[in-house]
Length: 480
Image (cartoon, rainbow, N blue to C red; front, top):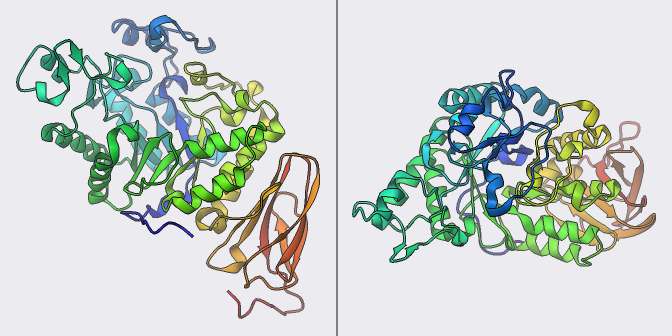
């Protein structure tokens, strides 16, 4: 049972059908047949350094690595849509694209200007048009808690301009900045002009055709500002999607459509590394406490974490993490390159360039992703089903659906081969009902609500209810 708290707005219908692909624009692809050298002036005239595509990013003193540019742009993303279609994803989330002095763009100078390093307005409009023609949904990154110290309003405020001082928290010896980073002054969000400006940014890009916003450091924005942004998005269309970044337990964020579920990520990874024994309780508890869980993002890595292949080098165990990502309630989010096995430590190593030479791909892993994406997009249970733990170790859970014949049971076994018997508390499941493994085709049968499942070592089962009719007899003819 979910808590009594309910969502302020219905989750957009398309979100249940979605698999999201996250792109760090500077590192994904350079469009129009260019190299970073061809675009060098775009970076060097603004104090940046260009880096060849295949050179791994490395941390530098005083965060100087934020001035290293590889040349990726919106033209490049638009040219790679066929790759994304082949993979099976249908939503693209890009890290910030607005005018900014850094490669990560989490410090906007002007929210109303697409950075020329990414191709500017022309590239942005082309990207939207081409992506929409290929039926992709698009999510932008909204960094509304802080901005760049190069922003014109802030530069005037710091000099004492009375028209702008109230937009920031300015003291005698400085200003309030995100985590004390002076180059990232925080907005004074309670100031009416500030919030009106931010909401105008939210509206502007939604009306240009994007489908939603990811809100950076949503916990810093607080409940009220998350709600105001969601209100603005929903006033344009209830089908606009707002997800906020939090690094805490996922409950209490019902004013938006969902959160980036780092609690899911950290729980799953700790479990597979043998550091956490209570995954079943953690996942069940979060499900029970989070009424908008179906709108939350199931992530295993991102631009802010070590890459999955680095954290879990054992590919069999890594595949179990991916299975959980695609079968736990929520929206799977694939960080660019994770599907081909790209490795990387913490920021900036996790922001390496995409590999476009197929000889460098883990093709088995990519095919595994394709299979799971296809299953996720075709199964009702994985889109809207409940989450009910049937067995803690190995982990077995039930995704109950409105129609019993859409239901699924998922089993995850990180240890040796094991047979486990579970009680499935659904009185609609008739004795002699078959469950078919969607990957292997093997069949398992339930009698009196009890079923025995054998699970391979470091393996899994994706079991779907199957109605086996015989000689025209359908035992589910009057059961739903």
